[in-house]
Length: 379
Image 1 (cartoon, rainbow, N blue to C red):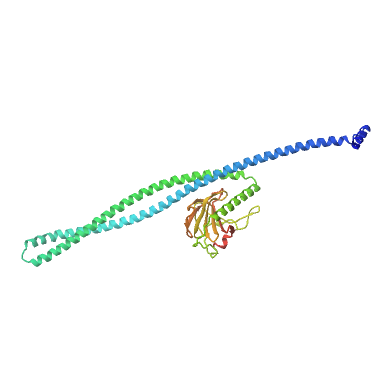
Image 2 (cartoon, rainbow, N blue to C red):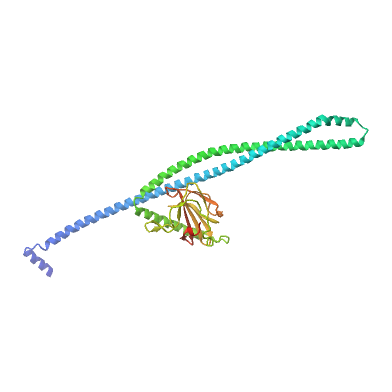
């Protein structure tokens, strides 16, 4: 009531000092609401763009995974073909050697048989006929008959050996022809597989270019690497749960500075150095050509062999006692989950999978889930 009287008194006095702030406040409030609406619209627009970008990136990653797996399949087939080519070529060399030896043996046997036949014809036939007509010396007849029987048996043995040599030569010649045809077919297959691999790599290059284009800032890259590392850690945690304690797998604790690196090449980073932002390297990136053989650092059991976002085709080997080794960015994997591998055995071929532009191998050693410096184990 008192406030109302005071208000009426001010009106009566003609004062506008009270009315002006109300008008100004109303205008300010209207402007503020408009600005707030504009900010909300901008946030919504930015969120929509972010969602679209993430969706596009996920699509690109799926395409990249598809391309990496297609390359892995083609590279694995090509690797098998090249192994078959090597084995077939070696077989051909061996068959050629056998063929040469058998031909020489055949020639010697032919010469010996010809000599025996000439000797039998020039002397044996006349003496044998004379012996049959001479019935006076029985002892001579028996001795001569034994002599002729011995010669005859020797000729028969030589003829049988000759026939066996001919049969072996025919068989070896047939095998040589078959292996030659196989070699030619493998060469045709190899050319087709090389072309397919080339096409798959070209397709993959497009996917990688799109992926790199979608990553516009260092903050985006940091966020991506963070998600990829979290994905790897989660995968390794699941893998560790599946690891079975095997008595013959004693781990790596006694093998410091005794193991060989999985592949030769320049080391592109140091363990624990800065990777991006606050993220640090948990392993070593080794520069090496596409297709170079990657070998396991020690005996163990394959626990994982599949594609992981950011790391491409990955293979993980359990060495026992909580030790695992990880090999990423492979072109193709040569082993499957559950396979037992021995120290130095080929397990994959190095490559560029997972979005890498340059070829190489990402290598980690972990103990009970924690990354450890590979330099402490490999020399």
